[in-house]
Image 1 (tube, rainbow, N blue to C red):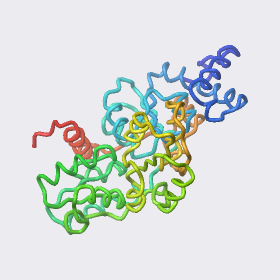
Image 2 (image 1 turned 60 degrees about the horizontal axis):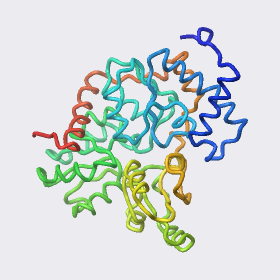
Image 3 (image 1 turned 30 degrees about the vertical axis):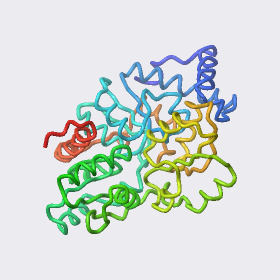
Length: 351
């Protein structure tokens, strides 16, 4: 559908859209009226085009607030988005996240058009290992099953036995260790070491670890935790499982983004610190405005590459660079490892 065929919003419609964005939490985050008016022109058009072209927009919680609150149809962590994408009936998926997430959506929806608005939205973890690297690692450890974090390319998933997310990695690894003495875990070295410690396993003996790291989480300073506790007595500090073992052992709670939000909802602490990408803090402040948050976060350049203007382009005139394609053989093998994740995580595994 071309820009000319889709009507422009009236001034009254734009005012109402700006008010909607403000009420959704953007005003609470500090968005001023001129910015809300600019964003309203984009979100109004995107939402109209989305309906007209039978598209759906999933967004990771790390995305910009105007995307999460303005145009997303469902929001969540990698596991939730994978499940949601597997169930959509839309003809087109415009994925607001990073490339490995859009690839997962395509693997689970091979007949649908999947678009990634920002072609450069990659992932340091996914980039740290290739399918060739994993095949070489498997050759050095014949017969050892491969558990790969979802932050990997489709080609790496195709070489894996099962995929995990930060939300279900402990459960799936425990299931694997009931059946195997040793596993390969890739590519997040910090997450691997954190999980090995939780499960009472020894890296090297029980777990072969790839040395990948997340550019957002690898540089958080464990020493800062002590300082923040003195500055904010009673603060509850929550960290993502991709953080270093030293930091993880100094905080109050460790988990994925969905786990962290759930914990904040249930906790009575006077204040919270979310040690992860800044988008989660923005999201938490909009859905839990009654809670107090102390910032300690970092921006992910890949997550921040997606902008409303690029989403609009993907809907109006999708470019070849925005289309996600996964070779059929790779997709079939990767889908098996993703479906094993669903089966084990949901206690449906029969093998």
